[in-house]
Image 1 (spheres, helix red, strand yellow):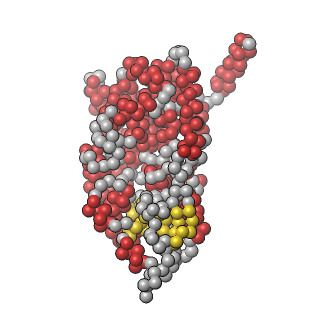
Image 2 (cartoon, helix red, strand yellow):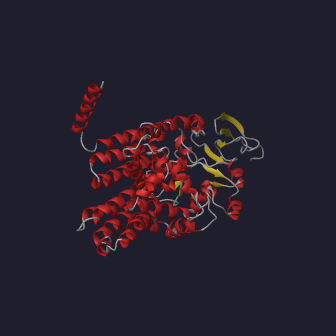
Image 3 (cartoon, one colour):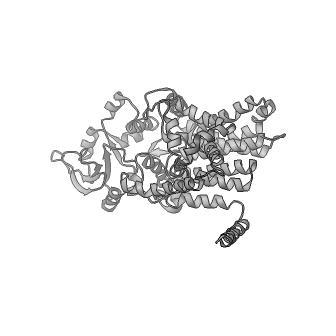
Amino acid sequence: MHKHYAGGMNALDDVRRRLPDGWPLLLLAVWLVALAGWRPVALPDEGRYGGVAYEMLSDGNWWTPTLFGLPYFHKPPLMYWIDRAAMALLGPTPLALRAAPLLGAWLLGWALWIEVRVRHGLRDAQQALAWLAVLPLFYLGAQYANHDMLVAGWMSLAVVSARVALGGDRLRLGWLCAAWAAMALAVLSKGLIGIVLPGLVVLPWLIMQRRWRALVQALHPAGLAVFALIALPWMLLMQQRYPGFFDYFIIEQHFHRYTEARFNNAQPVWFFLAVLPLATLPASLRLIGALRRGSFELWWIVVIVGFFSMPRSKLVGYVLPALLPLAVLLWQAWQGRRGARWAWGMGALLCVAAVPAIMVWGKPDHADVGAALRSRLAPGDRVVVTGEPFFDLRLQARLSEPPAVLADWEGLRRQGGDNWQRELSDAARFAPALGERVLWTPERLARERCAPGRIWLVATRADALPDAQLAFEGRRAALFTLPRPATCP
């Protein structure tokens, strides 16, 4: 048995030696993509961001992100560009709308691969990547369509590239330009944190080490030029087309959202101190020992967790940029330790089991209502939604035009707050004429009901109008028709 086992291991080693060095990165891509298209679209986030990408594809517009046809500047466009390209190739499927986070996760894995291979060697890079792959927060974050994993991937690549560029006796300019390019793409992924956080990780570390020359080299004109050429054109174009863009995108969506308490998702200051270990089980069972090993990696984690712990608004995905250094420390902490294979295997099992569990116990999307609407819609018909954010409806129903959204818009503006109606109301500020066409008041609906053509209403039964006639009952919402009132001329 022993000889047979040894012979099998030797054969396996021979196979590994014949493979290209980067084969684990290909395996990582397969691991992440395999189950990524199985589950329904998660609402509202995946419906919102997938809907924006679908509108770009449907309307033939690469530059201005739109939601229900209205300019949508809560986030920059890189995720939408990636998902738009994926939808053009694969169709508007759940897998396609998750292309951007999948790419971001793979970039994060590539950054870890570079970091560990440069400092420890090829075999260690393979092992560290294997530990990263089975962290549930990493695996599920790769399959959730929002901007967090994409920006985490670019920021991780930026920090690692900067370390390679500035870590030796002389500047490696190509790596420095790669770092600045990654920061520019991070800015286009989620805004200014794409440059602020890598800067907070790398620059204070250089100062603590008294590496003044490297600190100056980090601001090399070539790197700054690369950043400007990638990050600035889209912002300048939007400011030219929509004069209030900079004030809204920079001041309101960055500084106000970070410093003010009026936004949603309020959590206590210790939120990420609980989330990070819980979401990386069972590898994090050795977290205390892992943190004791940390130097630069520990500093990296402290910067990310500290930065996002200060504002009241917190979401789990904000802490994704801390996964690379955490994975390195956890890999080192489990090396040669009893139970390492059990911890790795349980992590892999948790990741794989999470997808069918979400399919069984998670909430459905609007695919059934969208299909029912698509099969019934005729030329001249109009579609109205109300009560809930049906962000995925245009994608699910393949609507050529955005549906109208029914609400008391004046009352909502006076009420304020941070919600999906506020997002649409803000968007209408940049295109008032489009806002009039899309944001319907009850008075506007009363007039439209007397116009030619049917009106289809998508809503829950609780939000439907009293005289709405049920046409289809879905799992999450229903499709109604609105009859022409007898009072119409």
